[in-house]
Image (cartoon, rainbow, N blue to C red; front, side, top):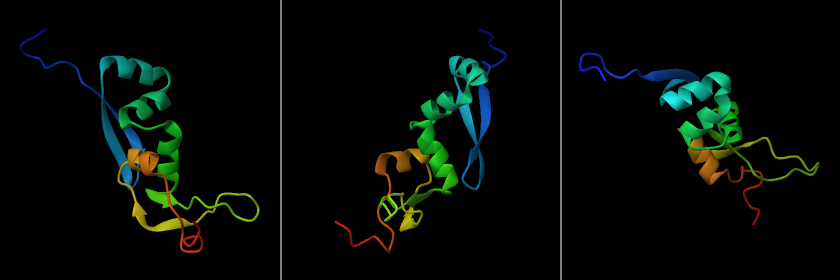
Length: 104
């Protein structure tokens, strides 16, 4: 290893709530990212790819977990709940919106 040049670093930009975010990848992660970025992004963020994509779609806010009368998930957000990292949404999930907040 050269004492003059630092080791090569691998950075990638990913979509993020409010803009973009830079991830630092290992050499192995960079190789795998070039072939299929999704699993590597999920690995680095510590959550599933679906959680990351849902977090982006909902702009960091939590979606109500109640089901509607048509057996579809409620499309409302949970008041006062947002996550600055997709892993927070993956770990804590959602909650109930003001319409469904009285459910057990």
